[in-house]
Amino acid sequence: MNDAIQNLRVLLVGGYPPPYGGVTVHIQRLQHYLNRAGANCLVLNQFRSEGQPSGNIINLSGGRLAQYFKMRALLTRTDAQIIHFHFSKLGNFLIGGRHLIKAAGKAICVATCHSGQLAVEFAHRHKFYRLAAIDLIRAFDHLIAVNPQQVEFYTKVIGIEAIRVSLIPTFILPESSQIELPQAMLNKVTALRKCCRWILMVSGYLLPYYGFDLFLEAVANLERLYHAKFGLIFIFYTKADENYRQLLLAKIEKHGCSLVYENIKPNDFLGLLQQSDLFVRPTLADSFGVSVAEALYLGTPVVASDVCARQEGAVLFRSGDVQDLVAKIRAVIENYANIKATLTEINLPNNAEQLLALYYELIKQGEK
Image (cartoon, rainbow, N blue to C red; front, side, top):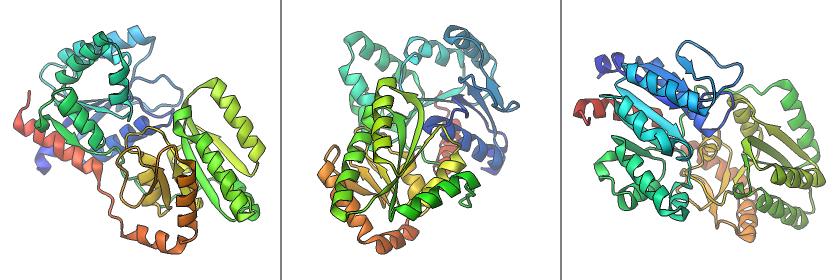
């Protein structure tokens, strides 16, 4: 297999940092892993941001239409054996995606939809959208499902044969668990800890379904119960509802004892996770929650909503139930040492390794 890996040519299509987020960091880590393993992996980057690397990153410029035609031209010329498309939802890909797959020629086309709302979005759209979505999804040679719910959606709703669907969560191990937090950030966390016994961290897009309001309500209840202030760290990424942003930031300011960061680098995110006592994932919808796995990997306990399959070790609460969230956070902090000790026994799978093995198998089987 080593010789096959040395000759493996992969093209990842999606976003590359900056900006930082679940999809872009996944692609960045996957590319690094594949190239370290000996494969030749390029990224076709759909984002137009300053500071992106060149070389094995092909940056697309121009508006959406210009990007589409450039992408199509590149796909017709690529010598990649595997073309792996990444997206958070079907969106604009629904219109021209079929033609992009066709342009790929003999390359094996794989797709990962990182959103946990794919099935919900599909169910609530009109008939023509659903027909177009079915046609597009069926056009891929293989689909990566990020949780069991997506497996069921692809096989039972879309009608994809089970052999063409693989369940591989999107968490890819960081290159190192030795994280050095910038001194300025570390100083702020240290100051926060001086006035707060517990530090809770939460992250996500600045959108209502990430459950930040639920989280703040739970914290208010906890502070009344313990007669103490909780320190909070908020990490926000990319997408935002501006009206919601203003309302939420006002609530955070009223709470005080909070740190707020936006679009920070992955290592800084991991450093803040290491400094936190507890990571909370209160989302009302989710695909897997890469940040849940990252926290557990670093030894930080997690309380997360039960909206999807979570990494082993996370403590789950009933989605949308603030009292259950309060109860689960209390259970963790009142049994903290024992829960933290159990995290050392969790064996996180190397999902990049699974993807590499899948690529090799797809080529060997000649699915296309």
